[in-house]
Image (cartoon, rainbow, N blue to C red):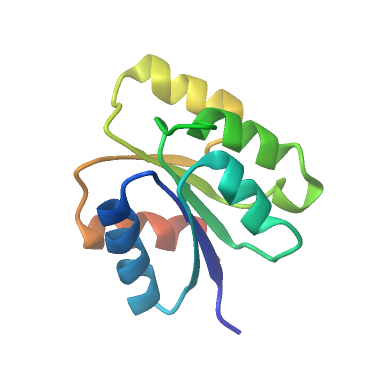
Length: 121
């Protein structure tokens, strides 16, 4: 059975790159352009991995992570933050919200798959 990843980013090119990389690795992919859209698309579906941007319109990545973590079905789901933000304070805020890991853009596909391989069983 394949695993499902939820990719959330307001940048179409980033979503396409992450989506392509994960599909090549055997994932089914659900895409969202902001946190609000991602929440509704994830409703009632088994999701094995969430990769979200931090800065997005409507609902940002931190709010999305907090809302996902409040749902029992996302309590243990790996959530990776993929963002241009690299300040330690932001990373700590992300961990406090429930982020499993942090990847700084720009990224390369091998790096992404390496991190995904560590958090998804």
